[in-house]
Image 1: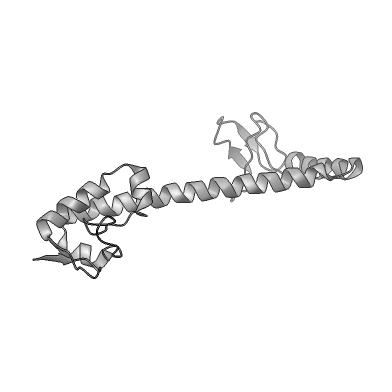
Image 2 (image 1 turned 60 degrees about the vertical axis):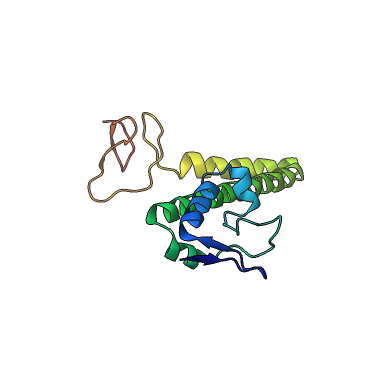
Length: 161
C-alpha cells in the first residue's frame, strides 16, 4: 500500500516511507518549505522527477493523523509568514502613500488637517478623566469605571468621582 507520484515515471512510495518523507519535509527549515510552497513532492523531485506535489487528499488517506497534522502545521506556519510579509509590505506602501500625500499639502491644508485631528481625538473621543484611556460607549448607568486605571467617573460630564 502506498502512493504513486503524478510524473510520467510514476515513482512509488510505500506508506511507511511516505510518512517519513512527509515528516522530514514538515520539519524542514522554513526557507526550504517556502521553496516547495509547503507542499510535498515525490522523493525524486526535482532531480529525476518533475511531477506536481502530492494532493492533500491522497496524503490524508495514507498518513497517520500525527504526520498529517505536522504537514498541515508546517503549511499553516508558511502561510502565516507569507501573510505577515504581505501585510508588512501593504503597510509600507500605505505609509509611503500617506507621507507623499502629506508632503504635497500646503500650510493651510496642514492646519486644517491638524484641526480636524484635534477635534476627532481631543473633543469627540470620550476619555477617562484621569488616565485619558478612550472608551467607545456604555449601557445604562452613567457611573463608569475605567478599564485601565479603575477610576470611577461620570459618563455624562466626564468628571472624576
